[in-house]
Image 1: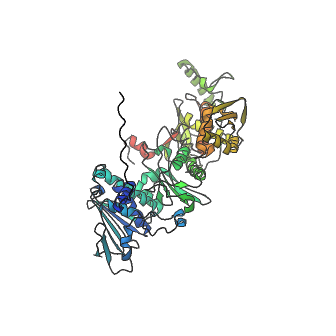
Image 2 (image 1 turned 180 degrees about the vertical axis):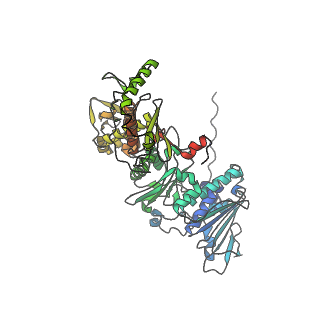
Image 3 (image 1 turned 90 degrees about the horizontal axis):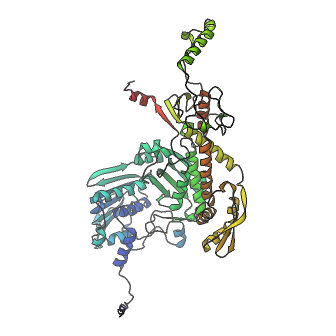
Length: 609
């Protein structure tokens, strides 16, 4: 026998929520942990024109958060309004909302924080004789002593909602999040001084400084040494910051900072653009470190898409993606080997089809270098006969040659080449070179692979992508969004060598493809392009596929291990590296050369200088 259906619940009457409950619901969106409170209060301090901000914490911010600034202050008559929901001085109309230039603008942060804590507000303007303190819970307003500016005290966070307090972590963890929130503000505003105190002890302090100095103070001098600065502008968009070198990449994405008009954000579009710029030079799953400041006209970005303002939406996402990617590509293009000098390009004997001198080995005309077998070592008797012959030829000419004492001591060439001059080869794998700093060790296969790869990319970029018509079009079932994207971006797809046309409302046909990608999965490539074109630069997906093929070609075209090179060939490879972009890493992101300076060499042998 079937069980009876459960009775429907009795309908409840619709009613308005009390203001306090409304604020507590809003606090659930805005106030996640003490760091959220710190971020909102520092935002307000910066909007008030503060030049020095003090953040004082107790128990990681759970017991107390006090943020003091020296900004313009709040007039005594407006103090009660500051604690009301949706009360703000930042915007007054929809036009203001569409071009927000301040850090805060919603007018709900103080009200939401006050609903889940015991909060007090003290402020003084330049025109006031003294400060006034307002208790958020009782509404009591009384005189107070402080200089111009504002102090916000938040005590016993989540005491009114104990269930939320159970989700907080240890005091040390919450403190770390609070410090990170202030660090983000400090990086964006080097003109403002910041100090963080915990339990009465100074945790961190950053005085007003230049942008470069502030980055070094906050992220460390190692980050400055292992990154490269850049600036890029395009119309209303201006980008600046520092791109971490690939060899300094980290296992975690804990040093990736992006600001839009001074507001710290996390944006998938920007992250994708930066990651694609590192594709050719980053090894495995390593995470790059970077600092990126984006300045854009306020009306071209919507900051009102997330309660905590951590996300934004750009009016022209593709232009942002292209600009960010180009800025990082240009910053990473310069090799460390080119920073000391700009060598002239050298026509290398190690080009796409290198030739070996006959004195090194004898091979059949069609023998490939990968099948090269080193010559058999000479016997002892052959060496003895060779020395006798050499002595016989040498004896008559001894008098005509300068004495060994008169011979000049070996020295570096007049031109100070960054990678120096080749002196030897080890096991047919590594090249040893000497420069003014000390010893340079080069992985010859990895280095030549990068040289060949960059030449292939330049050759591809200088010509139109060749399209190959298909005898039988490839058709596949598509979604309505894919069909719409194919129609909208037909011209872009054609420039990339793809001819994609709808056969019906749910079917697409590919009638031609890029000749370079003849071996690729055409349906998968088309789907990937159509899926990403709505968000990212349409050519980036195809470019990645092209570069993967070129990387394979470069790997097969580069010199192999166990290949013996003479000094001229080794020097030619070094000069090519100095003239090649991204020569510090091979196509797979592994390093191509390393420098050992004299101090490191002395340390190996416990030698003092």
